[in-house]
Image 1: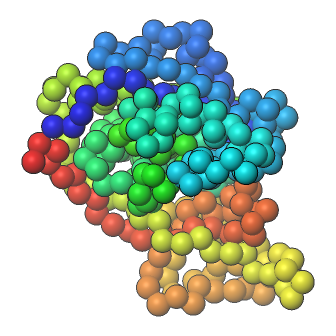
Image 2: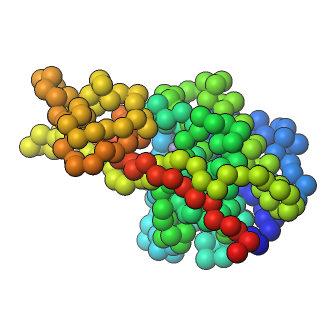
Image 3: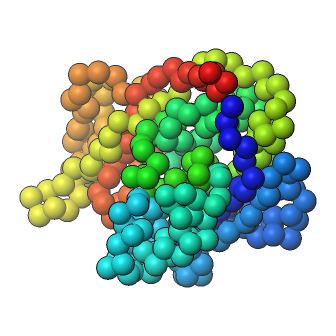
Length: 300
Ligand SMILES: [Zn+2]
């Protein structure tokens, strides 16, 4: 049996310009009954207040890349988000043996990814949560990004039994949009319901397999010899998150209008296509592999 869950943290504003999570946290702070469940406590945290105040993704570093165990224990890393990560490690952790059992972190994307449920382990607790939410929100995409919890640099890895990242788009940075807000709200409430059912030993009636996507790599935007962006996402690919990209399909189009095609040998699927937050790193999209995700029997 999975360990019981006693403390769940819902976090928003990890990226300061993703306002949906910020305002859901504020909403639930004034309506705590909505996130209250009988078998565990729910706590609400705004994780990057300074960036949020300035409506910027981050002040010094991307907060959602600061949570691997080595960086948390490295006191020379003293930028604003690096200090925030250390404070959150005290509040939720410590990472090696966290006080909080599960973290639900809310994000938005400028890409046309709809409701994406991002999780980093095939542990039945997380896969079951993804399946449960998809049962209730069939349009949700399951986004599997495997990594080891202590090494993982995402905030969600601060949960003792790991965590779950809810990523909804498309929405511009710095905006609220009710559809995105209410979708995120529904997904979080389903996640809490799932944990409650699981905690209290109730039947879940989940399928043993559901289709999803596995992250394989980030794909850079083409650059010229001076390292400047020389091409953009091709119009045929724009907004086509989770669609197949076959060898020879257009990926980018240069400033002069020349098409650059995908030269890989196998079909891939795109995600975070033309994500605004990745322009500082010159990343055009992520490649995904289509997979069947299996729910292992957690009682074995
Ligand atoms: Zn984000």
